[in-house]
Image 1: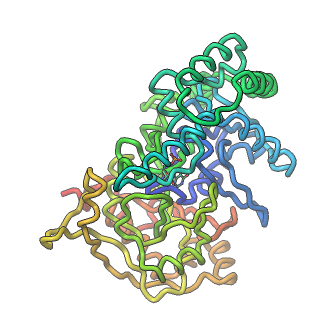
Image 2: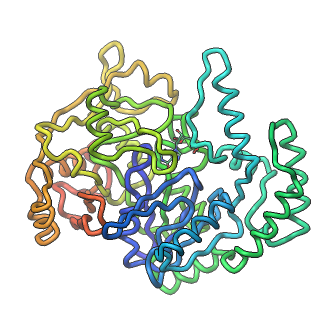
Image 3: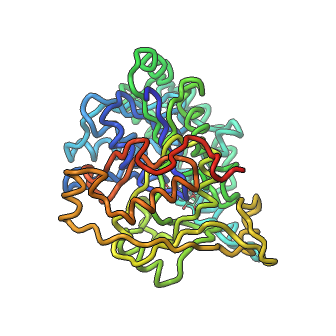
Length: 445
Ligand code: IMP
């Protein structure tokens, strides 16, 4: 598996960080390919929990290189703080590389993010999008509008100065901008400190692939938040899909071997936007408490609900998943039945098996559920047995649930996460789920 991409199959927060960290044990490079400080990838090593925002999880393992890749929008001040904090906690075991092509999120972008959210909310019938307020949207807009500053500019004082001046002209309508000269000086000093970690990362990755080393592409956010293929406009501003991961790393499609889609056994969403299988108030409370479902970046309570197979099949098709990783199955342990959204019905009662292009049109669709038998609570004892004996120790109803996911996507469930610790991850093998059939024959006909 020289090049493997790990992407979210739902609305983000599927525990991609944990799965990537697990797979990273065999890798040489781990590359974050998009997004920026809007992400929060939680990893628990022993009892110590850490959340990575702008660094790839490769930085946590000795001998690995964690690349903050070209497709990212990076807040350079927060990035430096993240590196220092990991170092202080003695968790920085790998090397950190920052792509010279990644774009910068400046304080102006955060101000603009908040300003835009307020503007949306003030319009008649309008509402805020519920962004993370980290400046993501404005930074990507500037990238495509060709106003952006890139990491490389931090190391080119004359360029930094002229590009910043241009940006200040462009943003003159915004309130409360920091003094330009002060920001320039701070960025320039920061550039000198970060310079040893800044590199043209594409040639390093191409060379690593040529040598047969494993490169992992760590996607952030998820398919349903993709700016083009997600529930627009309730999306992020990057392409958190397998194709986007290639663009965001500079690796060509012909080098890609595996695409791992990560999903929770249930689902969550943060911020506004369609969510057909959102649970009732009590169901949400149950899942939120059991799963600790609060934003790793913003601390906002997440909306919670059930697995939606319509969206999962869509995400599978879009990303070409070659395997799935199902996480947080322990959270559902002890339920008699586990609801799964298998389709939608429109107001006439007709079955809909495909997500609409228009976000508002989700409102008229009613999810159709199938209730699968639940599995027992995963007690410490049972978890220890699973750790020792592997797939054979899994409750049969849990295995049936995983089979059901495979049957309905055509993609084998190859990884299972049954607790927050690194060790509570199980490789099931490609043939472990019944009818694992790479491809989508089971449902596409
Ligand atoms: P932005 O990416 O901050 O612009 O936010 C746009 C939408 O994407 C909001 O609904 C956010 O809550 C959501 N979002 C952004 N990053 C993440 C993430 O890492 N996990 C889950 N939702 C996210």
